[in-house]
Length: 592
Image 1: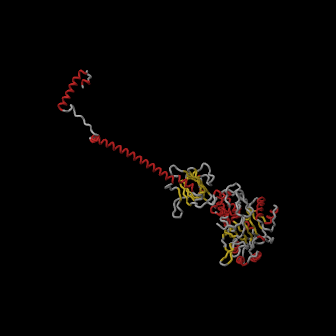
Image 2: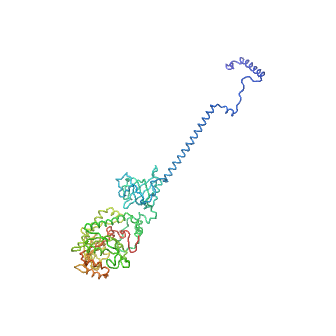
Image 3: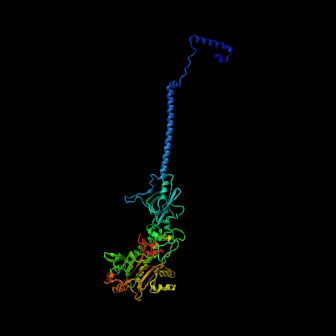
């Protein structure tokens, strides 16, 4: 091997190799075994595995354990990631579905069970100065529109409305379900809306609070409008198309609008009055009407008048005639009072109160289907004692009406504009003091204008209207009074005129050519009362108590009765008295 390794020639190492091989053969011959170490046995795999050292076993076991742990960790991580992903998806779905959300939904019914610390802000008080502040408002949901991922709402309370805006939020605070809930609520449902006041870039034309809007964060329905709306508020609020006549018969029939837009007819409005009264125009009309009541009381109380309350159930007819609603009063004939006339005279002239007034219902069984008559209306009555002349009464009435007109114009500016938006009208013109004409002067003005009118005939509605136009053009006023009416057209208790027995000490007041007050100096002598009652063919036993009240000393006196609904109608130049009666009663309507 060494010779080979040293690369010596064959002749050097070959003899040695041959000698070594011969020795190996001799060794095998003698021993029977090959020379050299015993051959290694091939080990079977199982044996080899069994003989692996404990060290290698531990190594492999550790490595296998590490791999198994790594694999288990990966699987666990995968499972955790999948569960987390499922959880997030479930939470997202829940948020979108509004599951568990408390910032929208149907509110618990208000049963007066508890009082919270919530503070509501009136929509009328929402102004730019509140920008950035959170507010809670309540009102009717007038409109709700779904726009993309948001909803726009208009919430109205009495005269005022505000826009609310609600869009989905990435953080889930405003969910898709909340937006859909808001947009899906029936119109006119009562809602509570919470949000932050903001100032829009452009005024909100559809709302009265044009310079603010609410970024909604919470929206709950307090009371859902379940029934089908009889008409849409948008249609009910639409401005008039042209001017209706305010005189003549009223049939309830409606003509199609010239502009083709939907408008709600008067009868449909009255059939569903509780909805009709929600319109801003109607809210304003009846607030103005309420203010007239307050101004009426205010003016008369300052002049030392006392408010009285007289019965509406009386025996016979309060002013004579047959236009009364009769009824059975425990076996006795009775009727609903046409006015408080007889009782207010008793109170003022016979009972020592001297100056009295009353506000209350008046009943007239007149089958008059016109635009200015009702079977029940609100009467504002006044009666006062005089010293010498009924002009003392006229002066009080003149001051009273000027106080009312000034008060409306000063205290109801917003209401007047809301009425004007739907029912355009010109402001009432009136003089200080009030223009006064005699009946004869009024008739003369009509004749000069080519209208037939006798000095002793009653004025027709048409001629009253024409006279109002003439007076407006000649004197520049919509409001005036006229006295010295023919005695034959006035009630039995009216004092005859001392200068002309065919005339009377009576008077009417007019707005825009229609009567709103009728009054007179009353007869305070019992014998003359009886004489005039007989002329009217009134049963004396029906007015016996009235006549007797003047037998114990009665003061000279006069007064008048005002129809509230007609005053409001004519001040606002509305075409129909039914627009100024809360729940009108006419020959064809006794509900709702």
